[in-house]
Amino acid sequence: MSQQSPAKVQSMDRALFAKLTGGLGDQATVGKLAAAFGQVYGEFLPDFIKTETGLDVSIAYAGCRSGLMNDLIAGLGGNYALANGSLRNWAPKFVLGCGSGFIMTLMEHMLGALPESIEAPVPRPLSTIELDLAVMVFDKIANVLRSAVNAAGGFEPYLDPPYNIENRPKPVADQADEFAAAITMMISLGKTVSEIVVIIPQQVLLRTVVSAPRAKNPSAASEAWTEQLSEQVRRSQVTLEARIRLQSLTLNTISRLAVGDVIPFMDAGDVRVEVSANSKDLYICEFGRSGENYTVRVKDNVNSDDELLRHLMN
Image (cartoon, rainbow, N blue to C red; front, side, top):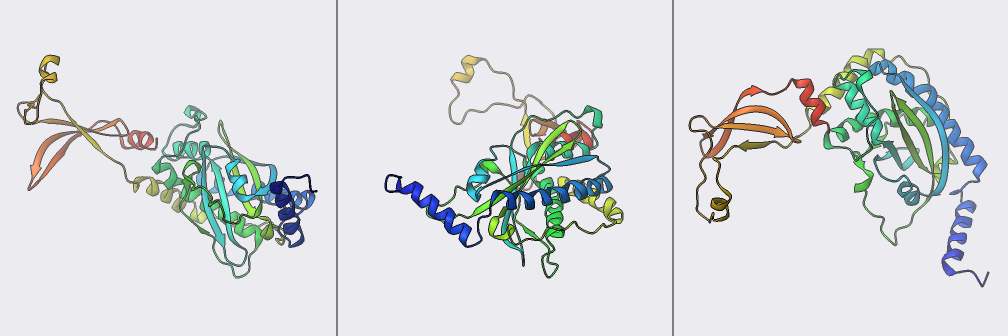
């Protein structure tokens, strides 16, 4: 023992202490509990999503990893959306994760794209609008979790706003971490295969009795849920840009421009303005002024509402 590094001795002592105090379980016990969660998600969540959205989703348990919570989260890699959560009388904190590809593909479906035209997206961090949609997805994942653990009191889970894993704050160096289990499920929607991950502190997991949630009839809420998803997208804030064409100048003239020089608009009458968002043209407008503010007045749409929404999600 004297020949081992201090860091390794400290790591061994920490794991041993966690085992003695119920904060770290053996592989067989943790794996059995994780598989029980995987079974609940596999049996319950696809039917729920099918009833709510009409979409066929399949979920399969993919395994469990054990380790310190921050290490497990870092091990997910990039292109994940995360949501920090808690459930009264069960867990003061847990973390939900979802591969960005599933959210992106779900957005395509919700905006009316033909299923056969939707290809598996290239993984990337989610846009602001997609993170708004992720709120609804994580809410459903958390509610399955709540039903499976039957926490006393019937409290609803609390979730922080979702965020891209790339934006997760770095752990404080001297802040205590705890052992956790990362329960992974594969979720398939059309040609897209992503992961759902539920990361639970083992102190909580080891005293949890997992039970399948009682069958419910969510059909009454189906239409409302779909409308809520669409409304969530439409309420998202988008930055607009306006372009006004200026008169052509030679490179020689441009190179000599100085402070105070004036460049006229291309249009001599009503000035044409092209308004865009995310590099997508939205409207043809005319330039004007209202009081002390410069304005643009919409004259024509460039694309249909569905086409605009489908583009803006990116």
